[in-house]
Length: 164
Length: 331
Image (cartoon, rainbow over all chains, first blue to last red; front, side):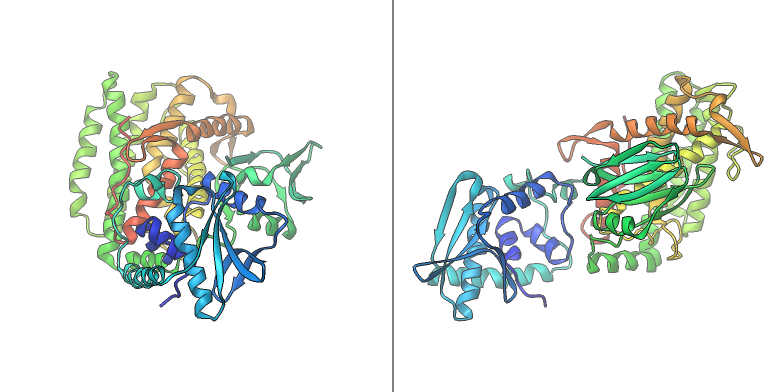
């Protein structure tokens, strides 16, 4: 059984089919320009800060401290996938909490000059646990979940794969 | 957008700073911005060192080599960066289980035959006498279900190609470009030479697309795997030969873009010379870049992309998601 990571949480909230593919190492088309754009946004923003922290099994984009409090950040290209970005970061907060680290979170949309502050609470933790149980069920399925046309398909690098 | 580069002159390929540099024997020098290169096809002699191979591997650029006669020799296929254990196992499973292998092998032949028929029908509508060839394709197609080994399917396909290539004489009706019969190694006339060269280019182009997927090019289904050379690209190319190679040839011959001056006689065969290859490659690339409407995706896609989409369909078949149906080029 593979460990659940942040990308899998994000995929779960964006598209369950993407989740199945990612979990089976079937990565999307790297020629897709939106992927390059995403990487560029991640690289070019917050250049003065250190980025990419591998903490245990999770890779966190930005970590900083403010008045002695730890803040972890997840950089997103656009708020189109806001919910999945939020849940991904909540997952990191939960992961840290499980290991005795208290932190707050910020989902960052540098292109939109926006950020969403997050604080973990009991209800969210329950939701995450439920999601993790379902993720395990989904990736254990023999075949990927059925294709659905959703707004997130437009910039998705799996789009041609799904609709070919 | 990345490009395919075709190098005809002899020379040295080097890594220079952070990009590629080709210095040809006649002294001309050219930078090839590495981020924009999909693959490089070498028709002339080339000298390479390990440094450049490491660089190409890191940048995921393929090299394809052709011999003196324009035949495909082999490729530099960088260590894969798309890798999925799950998919490799499924691909092997579909090879090892005879029933599963047969399903795919049959679809590749079906795809080839349907597209051959589509080309024949296109010319039939324009008044060429091809009714009998079309009828024969129909009966081959009807008989495909009965063929229960890849060899039997290959045999049917061989017969279909014979009939198809013979109908080139009706379609082209050009004294200089007569088919009569298909000959390879060596191609005995100009038309045969064009077909061989075009197929070589297509095999390499399909291989370059396979590289961008999770499929293993060594495991083919119609063409038997021997794990030493690529065979999946040969399978998939069958579907695209009538769609791409034939149409490039018809365009070149009908527009008189190519003539007997572009061929040289060597070792009892007729081969395209450098000028001829350049003309062919140019038309081939033009075709690969041209676009057609793809309904399910809802936008126009290039012929090169059509090859990739075909590979995606095969991946989905292997994953048990959606049964593979080969592309039918009805346009």
